[in-house]
Length: 123
Image 1: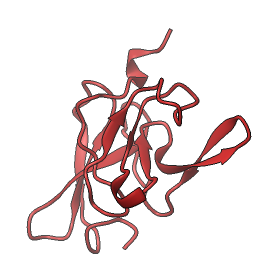
Image 2: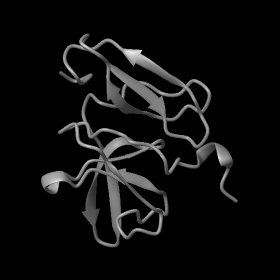
Image 3: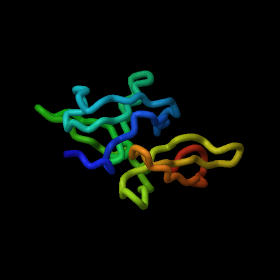
Image 4: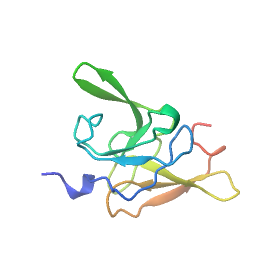
């Protein structure tokens, strides 16, 4: 039985860590999600970045019969204090350099604004 705490919300609008585009939801039955975990995928212009709360922002590297998540360098820097899972970038914040980061777990309302140099933590 899957714990309700680990269920990825289908109503998020995460932004890609590479190109700032909206990411699209993919159910756990989608072939690249071979571990059965739902995720969000960018796909803009062939971008392969994904997000799920367990792996954070990552890419999938294929090996025979398996896809392995590989972290996006410098992006996964904060976890939800309630669930201990990686946050996603929800939006840029006004004229000030920063971004709003939120928990991707269904019904969790935790978020915070990170003041960053530019739009991304890794800039």
